[in-house]
Length: 148
Image (cartoon, rainbow, N blue to C red; front, side, top):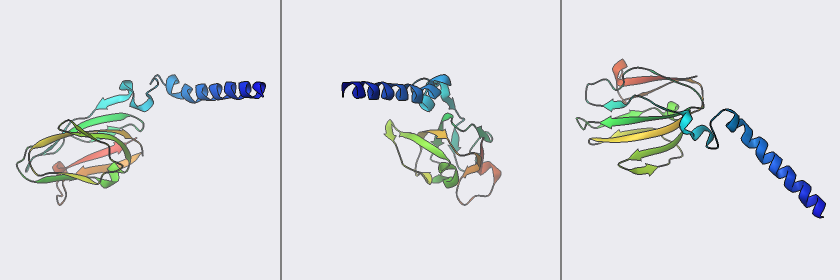
């Protein structure tokens, strides 16, 4: 019985070591995709009446952790919708005034008054997506997103 326990214990240790090897081999460390080495900041999205919401399109890499701020100036009640994009990413957290929210999913957000939030996520599903102010058609009222 002791010999079987020892063999099983050795097998479990070996299996654990092998499962951790890919993340460590990529240089990401034990935190894997959430490692600081795998994090990039994106330009903020600005929600302001009649103003462009983004500096330009985003090109993201699948498997990379990103953070961006959404800043509402309170000039008008404005929302940002992007259901397809939000379903192509894994949202780690949304931070609003120091409160951390960890949602299972997201369809849109809305600012009724001035404020800021930060969203941290991992890009997952390659494709072309967008986020936009609902009910608008102008190119400056949306941000085009490509996940490679």
